[in-house]
Every structure is written in structure tokens, then in C-alpha cells.
Length: 427
Image 1 (spheres, rainbow, N blue to C red):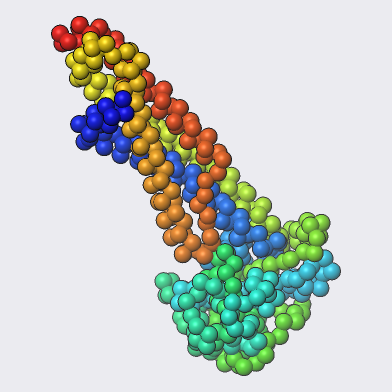
Image 2: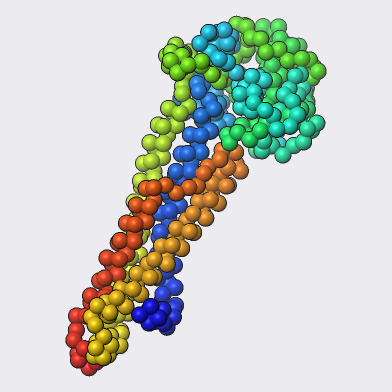
């Protein structure tokens, strides 16, 4: 019987191939939507695990998380530097690390921070040592530079027409181990160097200019503060040792990454710093809200994919019924020769089910491959690892597809037995 089915498929291989391709495309669409949504959700959740609490100026929770955790460029409002000093001295805080954005180099974000954050992200550096002077930098695992390389930071990005800073060039002293986060594509430098480059710290020639101080206080966003740097820049001593002690009169900053000592401390800190001027968020909690939106989009796309499958199945079923009708004489001859009805059903059912199975298998494999490709492109762009993997729920979906294919394949098989052998032979 298997030989008969395979021989018949070979005779009508063009039509059989078309059926397999149509089924494969519809199943691949469902597979891509399911796997890619899961990959984004798992990858972003794992990337956010390293960041317990983020404190910033009052504003958008989502934007604060995307900028501080995933390093997405955006003009965040600045909060007073006294917030960092207060957090650093809080007995409930294991450490508080400032982050300053706005510059880039070779397409990678330059982030001002402290050695404490580097030690938290990468307890052991993959190469070299951490920065110890204002003119030194530590690069993420995915930044293609060597130790000793020179980095000239640019205000903003090249695409946005940013200007290269001439006051300071950083020297790469170390590389972090892979973290699976967006920080793998970041260039980490001393926060005080960032402040100095933008006329926000005492080491700057124009720091004592009252006009500058008034202007910096009036500007509400980081990008606006950066726009003033062209008028208030000076030489930065690259060999000056870093100073990671912070006081209440420090410049404003967009965000502070906080590591609470206990879970209870985390909730208390979030409550204490959610007010009119500051905002504290759990990145994981913000991502959960984004997942809800992402889940809605997945449901819509999945509904479209399933609808497409329904149309494809209906078209295939119609073509198959027409094909069975054109073979009435062959089927009648088989019945006249005494072939049992169950064998006729098995042959017709087996042909269509085999095509469904082949198409579904090809679609799942193709969908998995495309999802892997999309994830690799996203990972290359964001450095966030997005694992493409199947789950137990996918097995249920696959069994559902197989059961549906088995039931649908019965329709033409039963139609093939409607007429008697004599009528089929006379047709």
C-alpha cells in the first residue's frame, strides 16, 4: 500500500509539491510568530535580571527602563545629583551606580558609570583591567576593539550629525566577559569624564560661570544639557585618577542603577523614590507590562496565521476532491478487483495525510530556521541574546495540527466511495 501511495504521488509530483509548499508556508508563519515572541520575551527578561531597581527623574517608566537597561537612545530628564549621594549612603543599598548617556563611538553607546557597576556586570574581566583614570575605558564583550585602542567620543550619533569631542580620547584598558545584555555593545567610561566633557563638573574651565549653571538648571533633558557643551568645553586631564565618592552638589544625571540588599529593601526603596521629582522602577515589572502588549500582538498575528492556514487547507481540500473525482475510474477498477473499502480509504487518506505531514514538518523546520535568523540579527544589533526554543505547549499545537490533518484527509477518502464500482467504470 505504501508503494502504491508513493507511486501515485510521483505521478502527480507537481501538484503534490504545490500542496506541500502551501502547507509549509502557512505552518512556518505560525511557527515564526510563536518562537519569535517567546525569544524576545525570554531574552529581554534574562537581560533585565542583572538590574534590580532603576531610579530616574519622574517620567515614563518604559523609557527609563529601555534607556537604562537596554541602552536605547532617548533624551531622559535629569534628576538632581543629590539623589545619587543619598542612595549611595542608604544602608538598604548594596551599591548605587550612576549612568550617563548621550555620546557614542563607532556606532556603540558610550556610557558613563563607575567601576562598581562593571564589577557587578562582569565580576571577572575577559581581558585587561577596569578603568582607573578619566581617559580610560572598558568595552563590552561585543565591541570589536583591542586593548590600547583609542576612542574619540561623539556627541550623539553619526547618523544624527553628532560632533566628535576633541577634549578627550579614551584608551581601552579592559573588556568585560559576555553578559547577554545590551551592555555587551557598550563602551563604559568614568562618569566624571562624561560630566567634564559636557561642562557639568568642577574640573571644567567654565564650571564657575553662573550663566552656565543657570542654563544647566533650566534644561530639563539630557539632550538639551548636551547641546550646551559646545559653548562650555575645555581640556580634560585624561591621566587624572577617577574619584567615585559622590556628594550632594554633583551634576544632574538621567538614571541610577541600584542593587538593594534584600527584597524588602527593594520594595521600600521603590516606594521612597516614587514621587514628584523621582521615579523608581523594577525593570522586570515594566517588561511584564510590555509583554502584555506583545502578547496581544502575538494573538493577532497568530489569528492571521491560523486564518491563512484555514484558507490554504480549504483550497487544498477542493483541489484534492477534484483530483479524486478525476480518478473515479481507477478507484472503481480497484473496487471491482475486490480491493476492500478500508484499503481504498487508507490509500486516498494516506496520500493527502502524507502531504500534510511533509508540509507541516517542512514548515516547522523552516519557521525555526527563520526565527533563528531573526533572533541572530536582533542579537547582533542589541547584544541581547534571544533564545529560539520549543516548549511543551508547542507539542500540543503540533498534535493539534496532526489531528486536524488526519480528519481533513478523510473527506476526499469518503467521497471516493460514494459511487459504485460499475458507475465509476462507466464514467
